[in-house]
Image 1 (cartoon, helix red, strand yellow):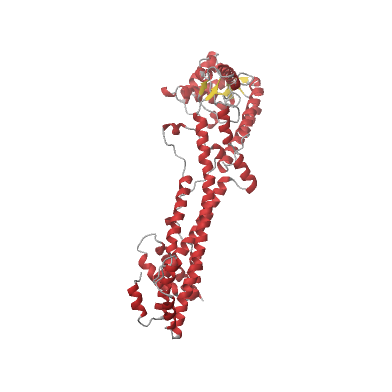
Image 2: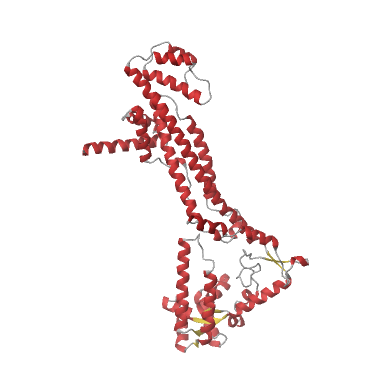
Length: 499
């Protein structure tokens, strides 16, 4: 910046129109930022009176006009920056819901379900009876045996051999379902597959009742089809022997899925006993330790000597604390969002990110143009942009923090289930970094034309040369501006040749 000695020296000689404008612009920058100016009012009047030729006056007026245009453009930059921050802040607010939901569900999953001894025994008996009454395909039974014998490396074929031995001995009496029942189960499986695909496409809009209804439908089909099924023929048993000795084909898998047995028979034959006898507090809604609809826990705690007010009419524990936590973790906000805006919460977050990115690109175009103009006239006009960019960077940093995938922080976290199921569908959101975003050519052209109102149509040629020098710094705004200005020049040249 010029010193007072420099100012006195300049004022003592004849100034050109551009020199006069540059000096006054430097003074304006200081005054506009609340600092002491370089010139007095008398100095400014003396400088203006010293401009006598039409060219000097025209040059002076053009650069003063540049300052006015830049000032107007900087106000646009501020508005654009604030708009981007507002959109990012809204997105952050929505993203915080995911983090809050994850924490709530982690707490609910980690806290053991509290029950009374009476409640535990009743739920355990009910679950055991329900499991023993279940019908399971031979394929499913083989997989369950394979899981039980996982430590011994029990493959599917060996599991089938064991089942076949039980069938031959009469301990297991599976039946082949009718073609109608098999088709009903197949249709149901196709519906389930379609729901899986739909959930993958729109995971933020889960059908909470589908899987519960599907389970009930399968149970109803088997309740009718199993008693009507027929015992296996010898040729079918022989086919099972072939399957148990080699990897099953698709047709053979279909047969395994068409033969059903009861878990009671498996239990009587010594299979799945530990799994059936052990109470699982989060297995299903019918026998869950916590009321249906609440987030369940895989662990259990039996309360000793509960107070009367803590029990309901059945003698079961009323876990008011867990119930309050569960009410904080629900779908209400997501559903209201969908109803009122017609788009899902993840879609809104993605839209806000896109809109913020578009405004940041406009902001970068202004920043690049102001830098270019500053280089041409030799006065730094974009001082405020540094502070605004810092503010934008801070908001971007917070957004990127919340947009990053939730990662387990310790060994317990790694064991947690998918805790974001109720708010699933959060799109993968790449980090937003100013250094990675580029101003669009259309924005650059728009602001280039604005500056041309004062600097002339070809002002950018000099700006491009200057920016070429700065473009040695990779990914700098100046480098971006230089590249885009070159592209515009090439396009203009091509159009002129074409005409």
